[in-house]
Length: 171
Image (tube, rainbow, N blue to C red):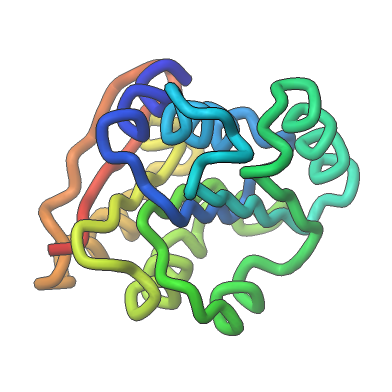
């Protein structure tokens, strides 16, 4: 979580979207880093966490309230694909961590493709669980999709913990 905080602190994204946020810890770390040094109500940063799990979304909202990030961070129980399709505001940082019971992380690449037109120049894309063996095929598919997109930098694997991250950036 510290890495996510520091990355956001340096990048200072204004519009942050998390698809598959569950209890919100990663998105809250990103948001806290983005607003560090300012009062949340005075910050121009806004984060939206999307998850289809209502219990996880309620927990994420409570975590946001406890960390006093509520004015800047909102969690919504909704389908991430529908959210991206409808979203009009450009995204500065996209965090992907969807986990579907039967197919795991297989749709990470689909989230990326749907989000690409919504990403600002220099937007950062972070995918969680880069080193989880049960998701290897899914994350390899995501890496391949990143490599196929000329507008994205090559993916960088970051072995930050047992799960790891993949980071890329829109050119």
